[in-house]
Amino acid sequence: MLSYWEKKHFFNYDLIVVGAGFVGLSTAIHFQQKHPKAKVVVLERGVLPTGASTKNAGFACFGSLTEILDDLKSMTQDEVLDLVRRRYKGLEAIRKEFGDKGIGYKHTYGFELLDRALISDLDQLEGVNSMLRVLFTQDVFSKVKKVAHFGFSPHIEAIVKNKFEGELDPGTYLDSLWKKAQKSGAKILTGITVEAIQDSQGLAIAKDGAGEKLEFSGQKIAVCTNAFSKKLLPELDLEPGRGLVLLSKPLEFEIPWKGTFHMDKGYVYFRQIDGRLLLGGARNLDFGGERTLDFAVNEQIRTHLQQLANEVVFPGKSLEWEMQWTGIMAFGSSKTPLIQPVGTKTAIAVRLGGMGVAVGYEVGRELSGILGKM
Image (spheres, helix red, strand yellow):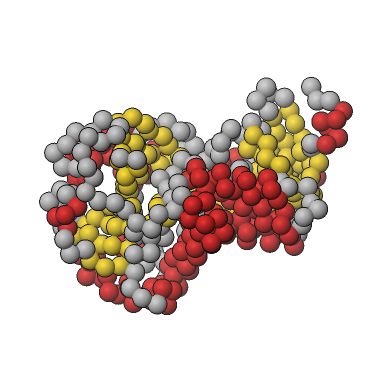
């Protein structure tokens, strides 16, 4: 039951942003900066962002060698270059905006492990470097000379280094976004589940944690809930992709490497965190099963990841696991983010293709520009 004061002050806005992840907060920040007198609210159903913003592995990456080669099989060279450009420029933008300390960034480089199944891709390393030189002016990828020093399984025949990648702390990054959004004047309301959008009336129909129905009125509405956006707009070209992340207990041995690592065309990834192994991905083992909005754990994938930890990452060692979690990403027929109006008062920014860390901030900036012209 709402009071007169609550109805008067908290339900009418110039812009309603649905989703308080990286994209939603960025959208609110950039719109508020361009329109300082506007009333902006961000609605989030969870206490923390529900999708993947704070559930990802913290990779500041834009694409491994084999991932880029795989993309070239279904995309033009210009399309692949545009993807890499968008991702890398996005990472550069958040480093510049918040500083490395503000996002917990460490420039520890990216690496990719190649086994016998993928070793032939190494023959195309120079060709990919040549293609990317228009963006980076120098070689991105290089072959690591002393593979044995990493201590991986002998089945790993080569390691490729990417000197432009690093790692960050998603929690630190989100905290910086919170502070910037609040400083700009935007409100953030959590525990609010938006169940429907009525574009013609500028209404976001929602309910709170107690189940009470709420109606937020806005001159404009931004939908930034990535895979969950299809619940509000079923016609969207996107589908969910669940990702599993495992975190070990503190390791009793010294880790002989640092950096961010990929395997299997980018589908598997790992890094060290506070003396622990963080390992995740492998949704390619069961694309159908992982095409879901359910945050459950796929036992087939968990078993596979644990096996990789014991046999490939730290061969001969048995790790104990302390935590596990899943995040929901969004994919579609194209790897390009979907940023566009979907009505007279509503616009969306979704389908980040598992690269929300890299592209989310700039996608929000782009969406705010579209909203400003509506």
